[in-house]
Structures are given as C-alpha cells and as structure tokens.
Length: 129
Length: 234
Image (tube, rainbow over all chains, first blue to last red; front, side, top):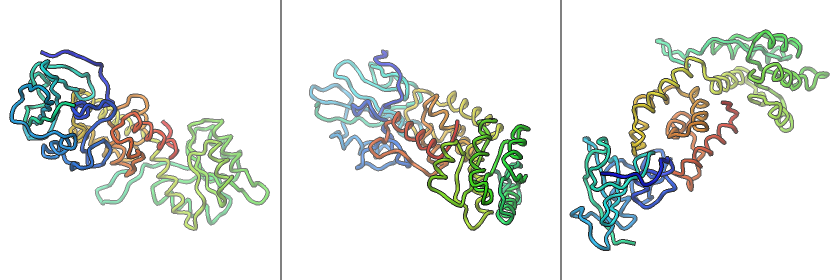
C-alpha cells in the first residue's frame, strides 16, 4: 500500500529526499553536475552511496524494524547491483520515497515501489535528529 | 557534419553571400568555405546583398568597412538584411572590435569576428557558428524522435541520472553533436528535463556554479543564459 503525499517535481530526487533535502538533486554523476557529498566518491556504487549517507551520520544497520529514536534509510539496487533508489523510514508509519521526478509517497513496506527499483540491499541508521 | 568512409569530414553543401571589398580577403574566405564544401557568392554592395536576401538566400558574411568612403556599409547591410528576414544568418567580420562589435550585436549579428591573418580560418569559424546555431531539419527531426523515445522509455519514477543519460536515445542525442545544442536549450526552457549531461558532453562547458550543483532550475537558467551569451537562438 502506498499513498501520495506531495505532487511531482524534478527539483529533488529520492537520494535528496532520503537525506531530508528538497531543493536539489543528489547524484554522483562523473561530470559533477548534480550534488554529491564531497567526502563520498562520485561512483554509482553502493559503497559510494553508503559513504554519502555516512557524511550525514548514518551507519549500516542489521534490520529494517522501527526503533524509537533511530532513523533508517534503505538503499536499493537493480539486478546488476546498480544503486537505483533510497527510501527513508517514517517512524511507525512506514517509509517515505520520492519517485524520481515524480511524486513523494508513503509506503507501508520498502518493497511497495516500482519494480525497476529492484530490491533493498542495505539498511542504514542514525540517531533521530 | 559527418564522416565519410574515407574518414574525411563532409559538411552539408550550402552557400554564403559575401560582402567583402578586399580581393585577397575575399579569395581567402572563398577558399575557406570551399574547404568545407560551401560556395561563396560575392556581392559588392548592400543593395546586391538585399536583392539576394529577397530571393531567399539565408547566409551572409559581411565586412563592416567597405572601402574608405563606405565605412559602415556592413552594419547598414546587416540591419537591412534582418529587416528582410530576422532569421537570416549574418556573420560580421571586421578589422576593428570595440564599439563596432557592440553595434553589430545590437543589430542582431549572429556572430562578430575580428579578422585574423588567416581568412580561411575566419570562414571556417563562421561555418561552425552557423552549423552550431541552425540545426538542419533532418537533425531536428531526429532529435525530436530520440527525445520522445527517451521520455517514453525512461520512467518518470527513475531516480538514477546515470540510467537517464545512458539510455540509447539520450546517447543518440549526444551523438548529434553541436547541432543539438539549440534544441537542447529550447527543451530546457520550454520543457525542463535532465539535459545537463548531454549539454556538457557535447559542448565541454559547464556554466553551473558549484553552489548550484543539483539545483535543477538554477542549472537550467545557467545553461539558457550561456546559450544566449553564445548567440544561440531557439
């Protein structure tokens, strides 16, 4: 189950939204066009995405369960292991996702997303801020 | 521009009307155009150029100063050509810059170059400027087809800029080269989308300030401003 929570816009993407930003697009493109944390390599790899979230205080987590005082982010990969998406946990209510240049949604479980996002490969966590 | 089997560059055939009173310069321009497969048709006065403009000839190279007594005939010609048809391409060559350049650009010259010692090179610059600003109809049609394919096949929910840019249709647009630039700028202005990768790949330029990385609306504005500064029209 999922529910739309805000209209389509191209001004931010899933990575930015997972990082709690809504005014720029995050992506590690090799040309340096889009925003990417300086301390993370500009590579479309899961280690690079994990390092990007480490700059925000996230660390790998062992499960996706909601825990009081903890924020979690799920990273997705396609069949070839390429990062495709990030979703942010919203307390007990489920998960928040920005769908590319499309809408923002709340979804019950990380898997309630378009199939081209593939599957969750890493869960990250940090203390809630 | 395409590459023939021999590996030689092949430019589309075309014609320039050239208003230039210096015979040596005219010969150099003529040769430079011929090097690229273009013809030159020489005229000696503003009225000659206008006659051809009214007959539909679209590309002009104009020397600003015609002799010692017709010091601004080139600018007058430019102004009148644009009155005949604002889409006429007029490249201005001049021995002088500064205020002449300002006046020429004010009169909507499509390019202004201070004459170099190599007229063939001057002619090549003009041709490159023309081709880069005026996509051929077949290029425009191919661009529109590829852009439509890209929009259709890349889901709006795609978050990966890499996937967007690596799509075969997007790569095909990059492969169109400089002629695609005004079409991309037009898209960016009228139907904003992730064309930044293509623009940088084609032009090698990046007018986006570091503070605006990822701020797509500011990025689009920066590219549109860059395009206008370069003299592109769309």
